[in-house]
Image (cartoon, rainbow, N blue to C red):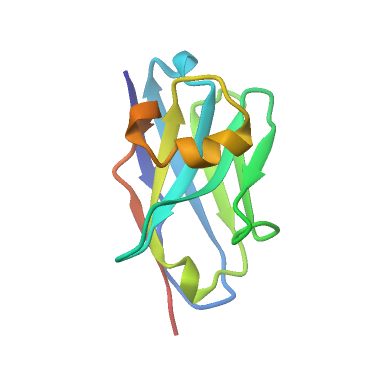
Length: 129
């Protein structure tokens, strides 16, 4: 089992930045892929960013060049640096850990299904004037 706990959400103005963190505990060596997905009110889940062991990453087109996913050296904390935030980035953001080896592109879809691994409880990000 893996437990995930997100932090760092909040309310910001358009153009500002936020950094989300996800603390992972438990059998973290069983989850070779980690990532972030989001869900806005009334919309489907969207994979935002993923990272695999070794550091290869993938991003959705909607956040590419604005968001950066990273892990600390212990691999137990996942980050999402979000720059130039837009109102359409408003959503609940979830940390996810995938139990199966896959490419970061494949993982962008996999992390939106809990059958592939574990989710945190989410942290709200609101971008508004």
